[in-house]
Length: 264
Image 1 (cartoon, rainbow, N blue to C red):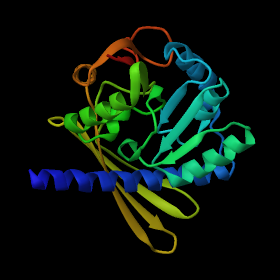
Image 2 (cartoon, rainbow, N blue to C red):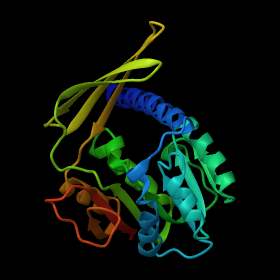
Image 3 (spheres, rainbow, N blue to C red):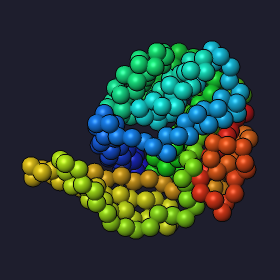
Image 4 (cartoon, rainbow, N blue to C red):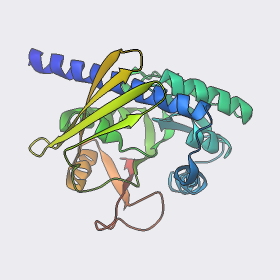
């Protein structure tokens, strides 16, 4: 048991290091003038759908998990909501703070993950866009713990909206790839363990100065049925299962998986 807890803690540290590296690369790219293009065109429709389905009103508090550089959090604030943006990347949060100041909206930005979050009161809703929240866990037990944390910070009847339009039911393939930047070459290896439904990733970053860094990341790839069972275990009522942040019911032949749940 002690060994299992230690392994879990080590994996969490490795996952966070990998994310901080990836997020720092995103922040540098955005600061250098990188354009999101069509990938960000859905911000308005995402927020419009969220504001309606979460049943929130002006002055209500919404927690935006994995808020990144803040595009959804800032849009939520424009609806008159009190927004808390949580992310594990200091680089992206710095960019989010600057962007929210330019947009003249007030948002509480918090660096860390859900287990680090300390709130004075419960929140009216929790939302997370563009990344399957449970993929950041290492398996069902850790995913259930994460859902329990969300449940605890929600007011009775509060809603939880999360998921991603690019989710695929088919597990990721084993593959190798690489990318180039002016400063580095990055090599990627991905493999999938069907027994544990775990994706294991290994990233090697080779600098032009000869430096070398390695990051390991492990992510769970749950089935639809597994997510539904965990929501039930965490005492949530599932109110919607969708392909994206829209109103059409989930179609397993299409990509994407988004959940709307209510604290029982």
